View 1 (spheres, rainbow, N blue to C red):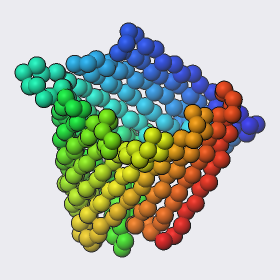
View 2: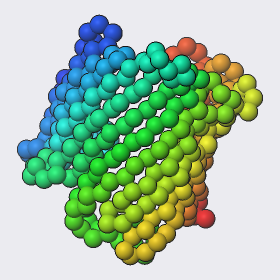
View 3: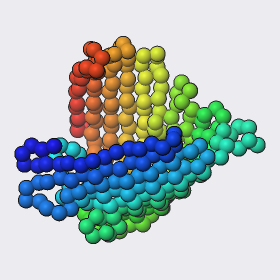
View 4: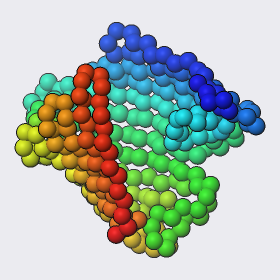
Length: 289
């Protein structure tokens, strides 16, 4: 595809073997006048998703000069290697437990043109799924972040350039989807760059107010203690969905962030007026509180 000044081309594919093995891959290249080299992106991924065992391996590269123009890159100039393993037995001797999950993952992101470590996240996770579909979990994280520019996580606090190694642990309890009110309650604490943090959260929630109206609230309260200061941030948001007919529904996302002192909303009306044809009416608004 191209607009006369920029061109992009590539190939991608997904192959599924049986019901639990898949291979995913792509190769893409862009051409922009005045830019040459480091203009490719490619990925290869293998997944085995069995009930008792699971394995995932991925390698992803995005060059510094890979410029899709019509696309959006969350991150560029990186080389990511990811591996994950899972053992999830179903104990017959414990009546209240449906399944245990033991997971370990390694996630390394390097700067593509220098191979300098930019981000690392090693994770160990244990989860128990009960017979009533509730889940209890414990997660240990080992993190590394390289700051190439100063970072301000809060008011009057600035993190200097450098590499930071820190660890944290999270406890979570999820209520089953069959409940009228469900969601995940979590407590996370540990290191945060060169300080400490504690987060209390409620996420992935859903409350069915009526058969047609539901809300999905979430809130995160973060207490961060750094050498430059102690502060607390709160992020609250809620998604609202109202189904007028099977082909017409209204959705909205409201979000409040006290660290940026902002209140934002995204409202959308979707109407499928005939099969395969849809009309969207979207309203966005952001205010400084």
